[in-house]
Amino acid sequence: MGSTYIVCCIVVAIALLVFLTVKVKLHPFFALTASAIAFGLLIGQNINDIMSAYAEGLGGTISGIGVVIAIGTVMGALMEKSGGAETMANAILRLTGKKHAALGLAITGYFVSIPVFCDSAFVLLSPLAKRMSRDTKTSMTTMAVALAMGLHATHMLVPPTPGPLSVAGILGADLGMVILLGMVVSIPVVAVALVAGRFLGEKYAFLPEELADEPEGAEQRRGPGSLEAFLPILVPIALMLLRTFASLESAPFGDGFVYNLFYSLGNTSVALLIGLIIAFITYRRVRPEDKQVWTFDGEVGEALKTAGQIVLIVGAGGAFATVLKLSDLQAIVTQAFSGVSLGILVPFIIGAIFRTAIGSGTVGMITAASMLLPLVDVLGFNSPIGLVIAMLACASGGFMVFHGNDDFFWVVTSTSGMKPEAAYKVFPIISVLQALTSLACVFILQMIFL
Image (cartoon, rainbow, N blue to C red; front, side, top):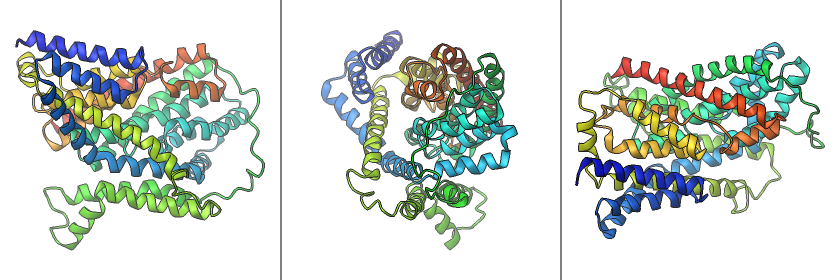
C-alpha cells in the first residue's frame, strides 16, 4: 500500500470528520468514531481489528483522563455557583483600579477561565464589564475583548480546563509542566489581545445602552472572601508543581518521606480532588440551604452531565489516534519529513484547521493531539518536555479562527451588546494574533528545551 494512498485516506477521514461535524451537525463523539472506522476500512483493515484498536484507544484514554475531567468540571461549577469567580474578578479590579479596568478584566479572565468554562464565566462577569465601561466611558468593545480573550487564553492553554487537560492526557505530557508553561505562554497571549482590543475598541466603539437589572437581594448575597475564592485553583496548581519539582533529576527532596508526600499529593486526580473539597466547603458555607448539591439533579449532577460528553469526545479522539497507528503513517511521515524540521507547525496547523472548521477549540486540540500522537517520535517530541511543547503547539493552533461557528462567539456578542458585524471584524483578527503569539512563544520554548 503506497504512501500516497495512505495520505489520501487520512485526507478523506479528516474531510469526513469536518463534514459530519459542520454540515451534518453530528456530535463530535460519533463523528470521530465514524472517521476512525472509515479510515480503518480504507486502509484495508477488517472491522474486528478496527474495533479492537478503537476500544483499546477509547478505554486507555478515558482511564487516564476521565476522572480528572469529571473532578475539574465539578470544581469549576461549584466555584461559579458559590460566587467565587465573581469574587476573584472584584479582587483583581480593586488592584488595577477603574483607570486600568480593561487590564483588570483581562487578568480576571486569565484566572477565572482556569477552572470555569469561558461561556458561563463571560455571562457571569459581563455585568461587571458593562458597569466598568459605563463608569470609565471606555468602549464596551474594548471591555468585551479584554474579558473574552483573557478567558480564551487560559481556556486553551491551562488545565484543568478540559481542552488542554485532555490533550495533555492523550499525549502523556506532565501536567505540572503543562500548567506552569501554559500559564507563562498565556501572559503574552492575553497582552496581545489587550493591545489589539484597545485599538479595535476605539474603531468600533460603543457604550452599553443599559445595565442588566440585578436580581433582588444581589447586594446582600454573601460570597466567599478573596483568598477563599482563589484557593481551589491555587492549591492544586501548587501541589502539581511541587510533584514536578520533586521529580527533577537533581532530586531536591531525595527519595524519603517528603518526596513521597509531594509526589502523592501532586498526583493530578488527588490535587484536583483537594481543590474540589475546598470548593465544596466554600459552596456549603455560602449556600447552606442547598441540600441537594451532590444529587443527580443538583449542581454536581449537572456538571457531570457536561463532563460526560467531554470525556466521550476525548476518548474518541484517543481511539482515532489508535486506529491511525494501524497504517504505516509513522514510516510515511519519517520519509516525507526527513531532513525537514517542521516541528511544532504540524500540530499547530492541524489544530487551526479544526478550530476554524468546527468552531470548538477543545475538539480542534483533541483532533490535533490524536493526529500527532503516532508521530511524536518522528517529530522529535518524545522527551517529557517535548510532549509538553507538543501539547502547547496543539493548543496554539486551536486558538484560530474564532468566529460565528463557535458558541462562545455568540455568547460574547449577545451578552456584551456588540453588533455581530462589528464582532466579525474584531474577534477573528484577535484570535489569529493570539494563535501566532502563542506559536511564537512555543517556538522559543522549543529552541530553549529541545
